[in-house]
Length: 573
Image (cartoon, rainbow, N blue to C red):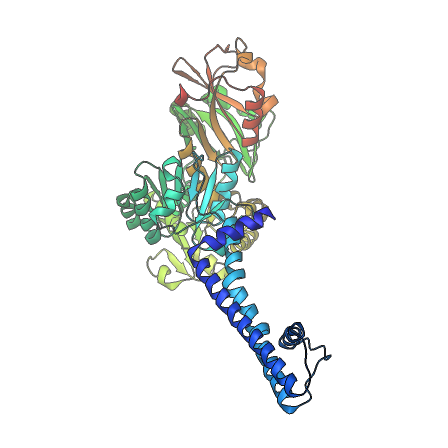
């Protein structure tokens, strides 16, 4: 009740509501005027008929007649009196049953309800907030990023200009603030000077306006913007964006790098000082079918296999883990060690690789990026695209439906070593993956996933490798938030550094069994500025050492809970 009274008081104090209240009072005075006039006329007409009633009775008759209750205990006998009753009844219907509810709702209840809704979707952040991430666009990518921010306890807020949209997001549990994304006051209310990052994933034109507005509000906050077009990269940088990425082009290049037989080298996916983290598909290499112990990779090349991707699932390997056709090795090592690994990889003997062009299904931004990357490396390809305006731009583009067998055969599906599915529709990607797997059981299929929840489905459909657009964006942004302390390689796989817990001092790596107890792998030890990559298991840890580990988010949490650091990260030293 106290809250209701407070809200009503605030509502009445607002300028618009004071005006509305004046209108309500005027309407009430009009009703009182009619009520008094009708009561006086009631007495006059009753005296004319020879009857006399008290003033209370007159007010009672007027109220019951105007409200259409009409108990019928007091009635006129003359035609004049009955005509007067009709007038009172009709005016009561108009004023009490039509105009009064409309006026009350329009000028009091609706503004009050609007104020209630606005209180659910605030327009500013508290002054105490610090280190938060501001998102100016909400979509599936934002949902993925918000989930990851929540795992690391990083506060965030989504800004939207539509109140109803804000209320819908609020009801779903998201932190939302109502405000115009191109208004400088919005960002001041969002405490932008205290923010860690602003993520602008809007279209290029609106994004440029937003970045320029942000720079008016703060010249120090870090911003990340996405550019759909090449020309927009320079424009967004001129507007003041700290980082500008073409995420669709990045995804296209990443898909092209994983084409079978194009380059058997390990693909570097992350760098942590001198430590390199790389991925290498095992399909059709001498590693396929062997266990890690049988491969002797650490002994012959120096790299350490710290993890395995198997159909979208990351796992910590053991010496007995067998490397399968769809296995992707995650390795840690120096540049020299990875070079040794590259030289050791060869196509499986006695197997004749397919010589046909790489088939790319979909000629959108990602598909064209794949084509550009393959073309830059001198690799033959064919792109299947149903839109003539795109297909007519290049002789290697084939216009038609990717589910048409004649079109696929024209593109070279029978001889291709790899098929890359790049459309933005996950349902279509699953459909095409199943179809291509049925046509070519032996072909390598690489697919794009727009939503993370469809990664496993695409693997079940027959894809050898699946790359998520939202995970790639999230990974890039998370790495910008903690450039010295944490490196996210992909969804669910992180490299992080942590000061040595005193309980681990004077113990050998082999004895503490970090991988077995926490799921993390120690890939480097930093001792007095000297980074020892892939250290010998017999090394004795010393006070002041810093460990560099790799593992999933759950593994990282398990390790930090079991072995909390006295100091965290080089950046805090």
